[in-house]
Image 1 (cartoon, rainbow, N blue to C red):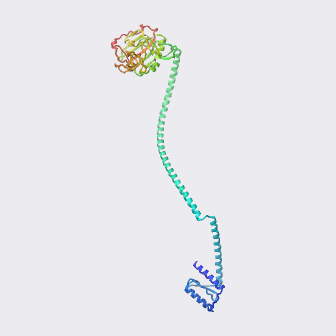
Image 2 (cartoon, one colour):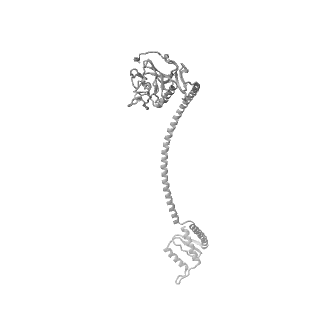
Image 3 (spheres, rainbow, N blue to C red):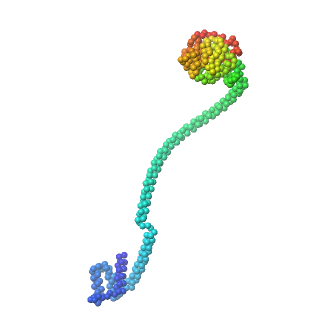
Length: 434
C-alpha cells in the first residue's frame, strides 16, 4: 500500500512537470538540468522519503524512493499507469457515493441510536418487571407444587389405607356371601315352616275357641277368640295333675325372661308362650269376664317336691279398675292360701304403685309385679334365683311367712263349669317341708 501511494504521488508530480513547464525567475540559471539537479539534491537533503521527478533527455522519469532506491519509468507507461489508477479512483469514488447513498437510506429507515437506546431501556424495564412478576409467580407455583406434593403423599397414604380396607372388605364380603347363602337356605327352610305354621294358624282360626277345653289332653299353642276382642295365641296344657283343658297364663322355669317390667308390659304381656311368659292383664281380664274361671297354681321346690293351690272362682278387673283381683273363691291345695291377702287388691308395678303402703312401692321392694297389699305373702313375678334362697325379692309362695325361692311355678285357668273339684289331685304334703 505504501508503494502504491508513492507511485500515485509520483504520477501526479510527473504530470505536472510535463504539462506545465516551469517558468524561470529572474536571476535563475538557464540550465534546467543543473537546476533540477540542485533541486533534487536540496529536497533529498531535507526529506529523503519525498520522491523527486527529473526530466531526462531520454524521456524517462526517475522516482527516488530513498537515497539508495531510484525508479525510472517512461512517460507512456506512466500515462497508462495513471489511467489505470484514475479509473480505480473513479470506481472508488462511485463506490463511496453508493455507500453514502446507502448510509443515508439506512439513516432514514433505521431509528437513531438514541431512539434505540430509549426503546432498549423501555424493553429492559418491561422485561425486568415481567421477570420479577414471573419470579413471584414461579415461587408461588413452587409453593403450590410443594403443597400439592404434601397432599399427594397424604392421599397416597389414605389410598393405601383404603386399599387395605377394600381388601379386608373383600374378605368379609366373601365370608358374608357364604353367610348370606347360608341364611338364604335358612330363610327357605323357615319360609316352609312359616307356611306350615300359617296353615296351622288358619286352621286354628277356623277352629278358634273360647277355651282350651276342646283340645282335651293335648298340649300346644292354639288360637283363642274371645267375643269382642281380637284373637290371640295361648298355650294349652292338657297333661297336668289337675286334668285336661287348662290354659297357662304365667310360667317361671329358668330365669330366661326378665319379669321386672313396667305397667304397659304387664298389660300387654311378654315372654315366650313355650317358655317363660306372662299372658297379659288385659287378655286375662277379657278371658275371665267372658265366663267364670278357676285358677290352679303348681309349685316346685329345688329339692324336687311339688305342691299346688286351687281357687274355684278367679276374676280380674279392667284397666280402669287397676286390673283388680276381684274374685278368688274357695281355696283347696297342699301349699298355702298365700293369695288370700291379695284379694280385692289392684295390680302394682315399679311405675304404677297401687299397694296399701304409703311410704314405699311394694313392687320395687319385692323386685316384681303383683296384687300387693302390705306388701305380700306371695310374689310369683319376682326375681328368679338359681338356688333356693331366703330373699324378699325372689319367687315365693309364703307358708308361715317364709321367703324361700321356688324353682318353678305355673299359673293355669279354665272355665269352672268343666271340672268338678273332685277331679283335682288329692296329694297331701306336710306344709312345713315346703
